[in-house]
Image 1 (cartoon, rainbow, N blue to C red):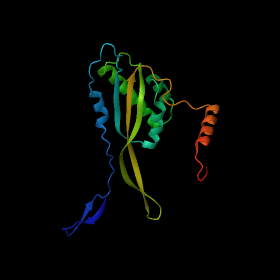
Image 2: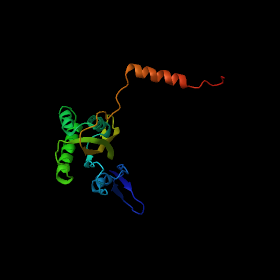
Image 3: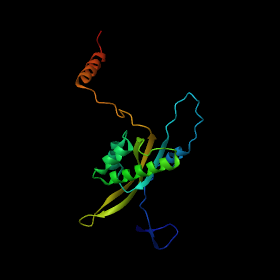
Length: 193
């Protein structure tokens, strides 16, 4: 807050000149996917697995810190993700664990999932939310600007067993060497025959 003389007024008045930044991402679009209706399956088609999208908005936690926790659980079964998050000593891990458990309960109640342990984390990511700016006092009558960051956490659970390799497996030493030699052989040397 600060005192400022506004146009057309003779006296000073109190104004709020700190603004918060707002992201343009529409969080409602994520949960709208739960309302999608697919056409009926033909008799020869395999059964479509059930899935659920869930989120938690405006978490008072930095998106950069939450990103590590979100990446940890991708591709895991729900039970394994909850076990892993129990032993991660971060505030974000506790929040992600709660959101996954909420999504698990919703899947059973509203999305025709028979067994709550038969789910895996297909998508898990973070979005920026509001950033509130504040002031922190420094020495000698100076001040510094402080950013209080908020984030949104999004998760999608899919019915069935998790895939064997959600992330590509790391190359072996021989495969890395072969890739390196192929890269060297395929390069073009300028101004030569």
